[in-house]
Length: 342
Image 1 (cartoon, rainbow, N blue to C red):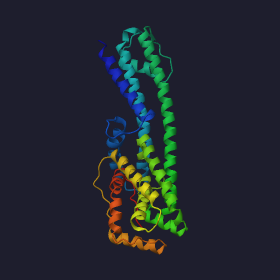
Image 2: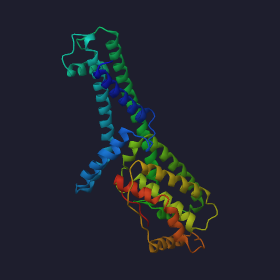
Image 3: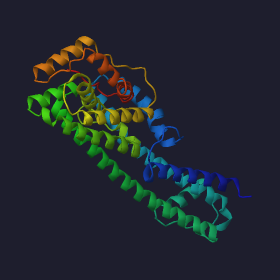
């Protein structure tokens, strides 16, 4: 039977490689499966970090602390992975201590030897004389180089996904102001004489929403990256386009509603799926009938023809109920600014 050190080392190395593989190589997050890295970042450290940020009175410093969490958590994960690999291989090497000359006097000596192999330094005075320790140090060097290469490629992919997400947020911000609002989006299109282009806009937003679901599944840590403007976030931008589709479907007399329907269905699924990784929330969005009617009057004044039905408010609330609770949950958990109305 192998020594206990070898068994412990193999478990640590296998666990770390699995986490790296599921986070970097095949990172799609499934809330129903047990994963250490996403849970550690999202459900353990983030609530503590957010609680500390809320104690800061300065809004700019508070936002800076919240914005620094995502990049710092990634760097922390990378360091932890390298340390775990080093510790795991050191345990295995201690279990093969009889095959090295001179023998390791402590676990610290084995840790230094493995570290020199992981980072391909190669100036340790000990010489492995057996096939097992030689092969072990060779594997450690391979995984050290491989892990660094995967991590670098992961950072580039993460940056690309972040740029793709935020470019659309900037456009929505420019069209509807801050905080983003579905009502202001529709008013903006009317002011610019682009009401006939709304179906195409809904199609564009529909594709963006589907892309957002995929990139956040692929890189769950992307949930915690914040937009450059504190009063604007990707969650409030998503809220705005879905509110625009709900108003369009429930209250406006227009012929082509297919793209708005697709946007609403895809956006509701996106809001539900992404909220699962953050946990439940009791927060709700209450829009009064008076505010809703005031918004419809603005739309009518801007040139939109309102639907003849008298239950527009009830239809809007029914459509909104499929995404608003999930988006409100994300706004609360991620400490984002709420979406506006008018």
